[in-house]
Image (cartoon, rainbow, N blue to C red; front, top):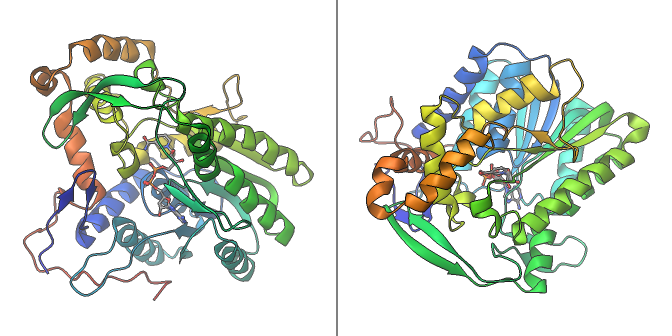
Length: 396
Ligand SMILES: NC(=O)c1ccc[n+]([C@@H]2O[C@H](COP(=O)([O-])OP(=O)(O)OC[C@H]3O[C@@H](n4cnc5c(N)ncnc54)[C@H](O)[C@@H]3O)[C@@H](O)[C@H]2O)c1
C-alpha cells in the first residue's frame, strides 16, 4: 500500500515501515561513527521500541556489542492497516542486529503485568543467563496494577493553582494562551502509580529473586527536570511528583542490590519531541525555542546523541559515574546551560504566532514529529508500494 501520514491532533494514525527502518539505520550509523564503548554485554531494555529506550537498545548493541532483550507494547500490522512505529522500529532493529551477528529478541506485551515480567525472566535464563544492564524507559498514560487489578490513569496537571501560559499548536504555528485546572489528590496519586518507581522496583525485585541479575548490575531509569516556564505543568505538577518518586526509587534499588554490588540510577535527559511530550501543553513551544537556540550553538542532540553520550561519558567512561547533589546523572546539562536558558526566557516573552517563525524552530519540531512515525526521511520512496505486514523476527 501507499502509506501517507494521517494526523489527528497530537498523534499520527499511520507509520511507514521503510521510514522507521531508515530511522533505526541512521541511529545505528551514528553510534558506530562514535566508536566502541567498553559497556555492558547483556542488556534488558524495558520500553525499547521508541524514543530514549530504542536509542538505549541501539547504543548497547552497536556501541558495545551487547545481546539485547527489548520489552515494549506496540500494535502489530493488519492487512491494510499499518503497525505502530515502535513495531516497525523493533523489526528493523532486530534485522540489523541479527545481520551483525548480535543476539536480539523482543517481547511485545504489558510491562506492568506479572506475566511479561515472568516471560522476560524466562528468556534471560534460557538465553543469556543474567543481565548486566537494565534500562527502564516506559512512558505510558495508564497502568493496570498487577496486585489490585485497578486501572490507574496519569494526568498532566499543575498542583495547587490553575496554570496559564503560552502554548503553540505545532501543526498550524498558532501561539495561544492555555489554562490548566489544578489536579486533585487522586490525580496526583494515580500519576505516581503509573509513572513513578513502583513498577521499576517490582521488575528489579522479581529479577533479583530469580537470580538473573549479574554481579555489579546497573539499572537506569529516565527523568526530566526542565526550565522555569514549564515547571508548573511539569516538574512541580503531577508528572513531577511521579519523577520525584522514580528518583527516590533509584536509592531504594541501590540499597536492595548492595549484596550483588548493583546500582540504580536516574538519568535526567533533555527535552525532545516524542508522542508523549507533544501532548503536554506549553512544552512544544519551549522545545521549538530550545531547538533553535541549541542548533545555533551547535549543541543540539536527539535521543541517540543523548544516550550515546550517557553510555560513553557517564556510565562506561571508566571513571566513577558523575552525579549531581541529588545523585542523578545529568545529560540535560547542555539544555540547562545558563546561556541557553537565559535566551529562552527572553524569547518566551516575545513569542507570538508571527514571531515564532523567526525566533523558534517550528520546522525542526514538525520534522522530528513526522520522523517519529517514519515520515520525512531522505532515501525513502514514499510513493512506492510498501508492505505494511512487516514482522519482528523473534516474534514471528
Ligand atoms: N521525551 C522527552 O522529552 C523526555 C525527556 C526526559 C526524560 N524522558 C523520559 O524518558 C522515558 C521514555 O520516554 P520517551 O519520550 O522515550 O517515550 P516513548 O513514548 O518514545 O517510549 C515509551 C516506550 O514505552 C513502551 N511502553 C509504554 N507502555 C508500555 C507498557 N504498558 N508495556 C510495555 N511497554 C510500554 C513503548 O512501547 C515505548 O517503547 C520516560 O520516562 C520519559 O519521562 C523523556
